[in-house]
Length: 563
Image (cartoon, rainbow, N blue to C red; front, side, top):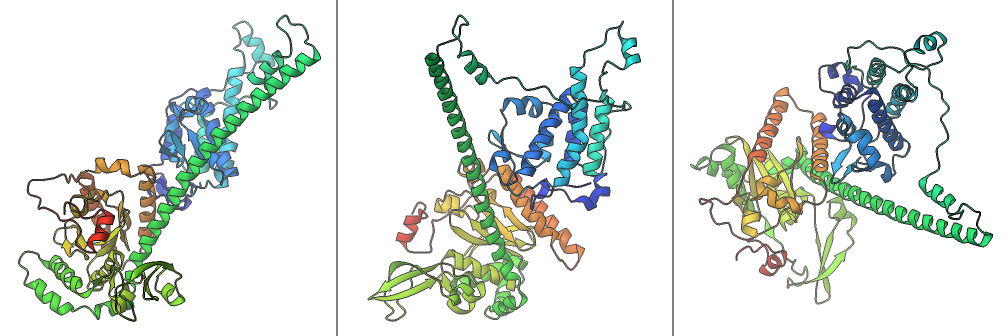
């Protein structure tokens, strides 16, 4: 059997054809959906539904890049009545990786159906569909004619529910490698079905146009009147077709916008993961450790009576880094040392690109231009520049955490801020760390203190992958939801889960102990984020606005809070 193979769908993805034996003991959503569709509906209704499923898969398989085949309005009369509204119909579509986005079902572009799926379904389900059609089309024999009909074979008898069951079970066996038994009734052979279909009747528009060619009394019209009426009818049909095309183009543009937003979001997630992975090079960590006074920090941590273990070391590392790194509003002139003024953006040099500086800010003073490359190489920041804004601070500090042995991850806020989280062995949870502000474990700092209107906050761990941690950083997730408009929550969840599954599958850990530990960390955080209710409490300390950066710069960003 074969499974659907979307590139990264996490819990929506199956394990693959090599897991066929395990699937017999595990849940198979598509097989369950098909079984429910079969056992809860008549053979005719099940055949109609399977016909819609096959047609949908055929369109996507034959036209994988066309958006119009990947978006279905759930209120579409034929689709709703034939499939979505009947038992098992919705389950089948969701198992085929269609997502509910508003009033539509959307199939993400990365989902590609293997050709074998369409071939198996058409081969095994289409005969069942035709047999059920024959059952409905054939007249029921009367009591007197039944014996003669049976003797001559001139009357087509109906196909039994068992035959339909056998066809569906056979299709599931061919596609999935297992065969749920939807019916205990033994199958009976399906009767032969004529292959020639009757000609389709004229459409309503065609019929109306034909009727307009004759007068009200049925008499033939004059040539002039006939030509006029024909032109009016054709003009009306053209207008309707134009309006229909406009609606289709609008729907296609909306689907394209959804797809574009999803791709941009995914690219940002990939960028965050690349940053998290950059801290794991052994040589990079060794060079970073060389600039950190680790023994001094460990001695101070040992004297800390409030925090214990790695939490105390994290506290001391934050203090040290605040004095080690410097904030950069604008660089001083590299010739005179005077203040500079913004002069636009520059093209990065090969050397700057080598250290991840794809953006270079230019500043001018007395005709001299000073460059400010926004390096994304944490080792370059630690060893050479030792300055920057929040991006540089969080990048370099997260590397310091990894260099001293802390389990750290890089956190990205979609409203333009970044920081670090470290796992607390004593508290068994992730601790918020902002190196710019020298703040530890104050996750509501940005929402309540700075006054930021957060949307998405994602943490990137080199082993676990990306995690949506927005709930940890807002007072009310319900109030945050209207601002999360980049994509449907179900799409985001599937995207993150897919990347996490891929990351964990590629994990090369030294022992099973680490894998179990990571799974425990994930479970603990999922429980925390699900249950967290961080509304204002009477014992919460007052949280300040942003402290780093010029007042003008902070005011422009709206991060002064109540100051």
